[in-house]
Image 1: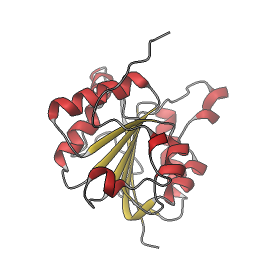
Image 2 (image 1 turned 180 degrees about the horizontal axis):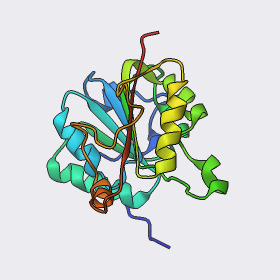
Image 3 (image 1 turned 180 degrees about the vertical axis):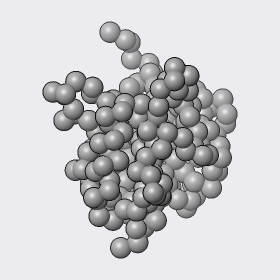
Image 4 (image 1 turned 60 degrees about the horizontal axis):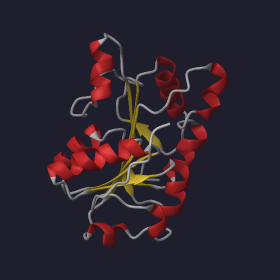
Length: 208
């Protein structure tokens, strides 16, 4: 059993200290648009993405304490001011702390694939979750999903084709194995170096 790491970083927040929904303009000290990464891992993706987009405020959540700690260390080293990290479960956090219609981007990179068939109902990304998430996206918001698990990639690509309120940004493809300009995590790079594929899905919320 891993010990719990105390995180002392100006970029780390505790959800219990936030309003419902949170006042993100006050938290970041500006009115820049907000984006969310669900499952930030060790922070390599969000650090590079946030550095590229200083005009956007990023919220990075992960269920694992060690990942949040490593993410904060990366942010602190780079002195990035446009990211806040929380140790939270996605659906509850979004419901309680994110204003509806406010997110301009959502990134879901390599979530737990629950590879055994009897466990696949535990996967985060399914039709119900995407319908739920749609309510929190601003018109024109981008939704990115990436996975290293073949079955998960094709399942998400298939379900998104029939989901109202989204348009496919990779058309005529339903997914791709490379996405120009999209930063790869250390985990993704290691997986691709073994000759395996990452499945990228990119949709945009339509203005309806």
